[in-house]
Image: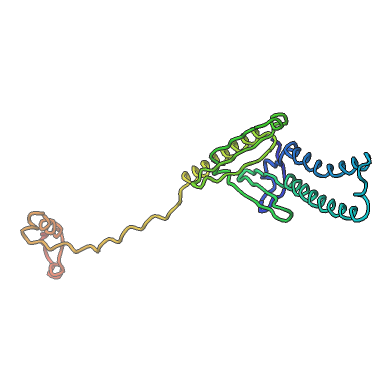
Length: 247
């Protein structure tokens, strides 16, 4: 399916449009034939009456004015219906981007309805071709359903190659699912950096308890102090002079 580039209301990027489709021209063939007959039949009847010399009084006097008024109203209504049918055929279109499916419906002369459906929410896509003309010209309907509780759906009516369009929608759906999965994996792998928590303040150290002489003797601390005093000379000994006994 060739890619199309066409501006749509609310589109952020025209290049995202993948499929732009209207109804197949053969689907308008029945309305065209009906409108043509609706407009031509009165003219054929009047020509037959005039050519085969039927009562020509209908073309004289007030009859002519009345006939002109009736035919004018008839053609005004007929042309209006034919024009509305053509507008509905031409302006009803379907646009598929990589993120959503857009259905644009022309309502009357001045109304337009736009429906949008996210490709990510697509659950099921069904294509169908029914009838002689659809089979000969290869056009049909594509039903797109969502996975929501309300079961929203969009019907692409009488579009060319419905099987190809349905396959394209599912391919876009798979691409979106894969992209969402990759982004989630990247986010899970990167994580978030948080500053380390400061350790709680430690309580002030309490002074060691005083030891009794018995405990000092047991631990040997008293003996260490006595040993540290050996070899020391006091000031009084230096003042006395003479021999000094080293303790």
